[in-house]
Length: 224
Image (cartoon, rainbow, N blue to C red; front, side, top):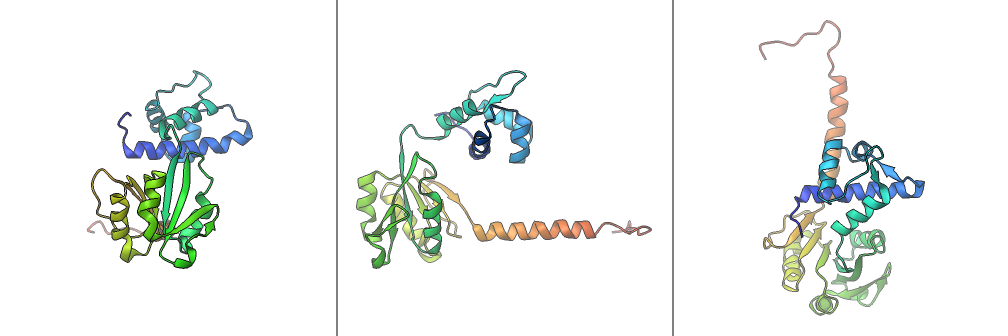
């Protein structure tokens, strides 16, 4: 597999989502500036990223939507289905199950784990739930290499270390703590609270910038 920067892969995933939204409209071709406008990057950046796929568009037409999607899927997705586990079936975990189950056919949510005995044996949104004491056996049985972490912050590090010991190679972390794990393990941190704080900050900043425009005749002290 070619070594590609993480940011490039992230943008390609975004481009794929944008292209998939075009399919129901029957659109056959798309240009780099169309993708760039929705992805909030430059057309040149889109073209550079697509070059990593080895796919070329048609002069005068742009990129074939379905052909580009196929090229992206070959690049991003594993050749075979991958099994995924969710750890933590609280309010957030249940919401993640409702959203993720069936969304990507090549990424299968095979098992969910929780320390609540009442959830052991339940099937939630089509995903079987197991007690955390069975985590090692279930992960081994289904050869699970990817996990989604939605546990309380106090136990996140311990649970992550156990997942790695059981053979997991990648973690999507929804817990607002920094995990300290071996370098070969890939971790994606999704901090919803911090994202909301950033949105709030920049929303206020844009409002303040608009109000801060100088009124007629107002000057700024050049000594400042």
